[in-house]
Length: 193
Image (cartoon, rainbow, N blue to C red; front, side, top):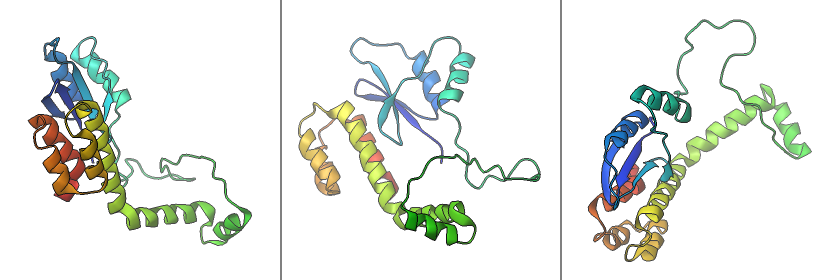
């Protein structure tokens, strides 16, 4: 899954796409006093700042560190595995559990780390749809708060969004500016179309 971004100038959607594509188009658009340009990360609905100073190569180089390309979990290793621990992108962090939890984890085949990874993977599979719906609703709300917070029926529309009342929600935002309305619906419901 690739990270996508959407830029708005005032109430008009300028472009949606990968970070580099959006940044270069925004860089070329003449700023208007009546419509500031805001870039949103579609996955979160939050605004993000891109440093657009310098030439195209400089902008893209800075973006590569700000928005690194996502690595698929199933990407095969590019070089043969040597001895020792595999390079899984493992990040060590602290986990605080009660003694009975540690006892159970340590008694599992492969030890605590393997058991925890299996539990997390199982939980992700079990609640995946609900998690995606919650993330989509949150992204739509964050975008909506920024771009439509002063529009008529914003609070009622927010209630309908969180109640997952799609019919009422789309009815309440029907008179909002087209690009804003369409982007909110896309963020909230595109995975359930």
